[in-house]
Figure 1 (cartoon, chains in turn orange, blue):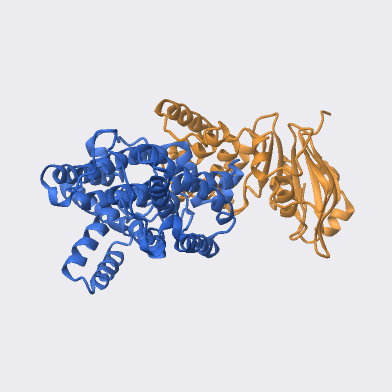
Figure 2: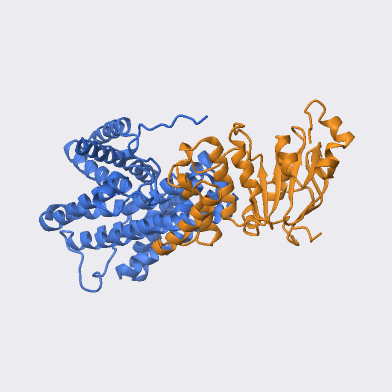
Length: 251
Length: 351
């Protein structure tokens, strides 16, 4: 097993007397597809926010590719390859699909401070954007405004933006949320075809999706890790079963 | 199920659009999108400037004032329309620029106009950097209050610092050398007009290029969706501070031009009402479109001039009435009206 690309050590977050993340030790290896599950209010979103830097931990540390990034800003972590998607769409709805990706590409290529336009560069970036869109089957939609797309496609644009940033670690916050079941297929296909050296942590309520794709599963309950293991191990774990009683885990 | 797509709007409403696959290099292509309005306004303004230069001797001084207001409006549009930063205190940078060249001339004999312009821009940029750090920590109403607070502070300082600023009497005795050592500021205002026009053209080119650059688009991105910009690795705070400084510098240059062309600086250049007026101008023209702000500046200044001549006592009433009508019938500003006219023209042509 290779060195973890993302690690947390004794990560703790208290809001006053309330502990929302409790002594979380977590690690993610390159090329693995791991799922984070847990009942509502288990602290999954807080954990992601701690990873991305939106929330500062009370104690403990976040280590990305061997570097302690606990004190770094959100954008500094993104620049180092820790990229997330959002549970609800946070796209630029009035821009076209390609423009959404281009914005991300400009930042990735360090063009964000460039105060003058450059048509030749622009074409290169445009081609790159369409290459990424092509991978997600979104290229026919490139010239349409995001808000004109069906919701499922909009979720894919989220992933396209994330891919434009060449992530080492991709945090997917409920990528299939709100997508009608007829459209989840596209998302699944895309997830299957992600680069093999990419580490993916997916937060998902859809257990079918989780047990179909995840190589490892971490179960979070009340801010603490209840269990970690392969889908089989988790499915047969009695404690997990009792927590999810009635929610039905089928593997 | 796909949601219904609203398709009743003929023109895109977002500022800064990238050139899509649709042909935009042709006249027809330009007229179809928002670029058409920009072009129409640019051509009209250019013709108006030329006509004024050739035949409008009596209006040269007024035209210089218009050009100055346009630069000021542009600086506010970059801030408010593009980056989504609100301000009701931008006169502080305009006024500081005016006082910078005024004091440099009166106290230190710095009378060369072009270098003095740069000085004014630099001084205003410095104040922009200092206050921007604080202003940008807040958002919305808090931001509005802070910009007003800083503006009031500086206004009061200028009022009290009589030996330096002349206080309420204004700064007298300002001398400005001929532009480039050749063109003396004359009583007809020809030099004033051409000089301000030249600076305006440079500023407009700068602003147009900037708003089409990756930097300019990132500002729109921040306005539209700050969280998302952060999530793609943008240092939002620093990006906003940079445009705040640029905008302050441009406002300072506009103020300096006013001081140089009128060879006088009064406290009114720092006054709150000027901050309000310039915001009204940007809204009137249509925020976030550059050419909207420019058009707004022309229309507002000309109406103000005409109305105050026709009805010196109550002209503010008529101005208010006019603004109310325009806001009611053209919520996207004058440039929105131009958009609609062009769309109408296009559909007639197609029919």
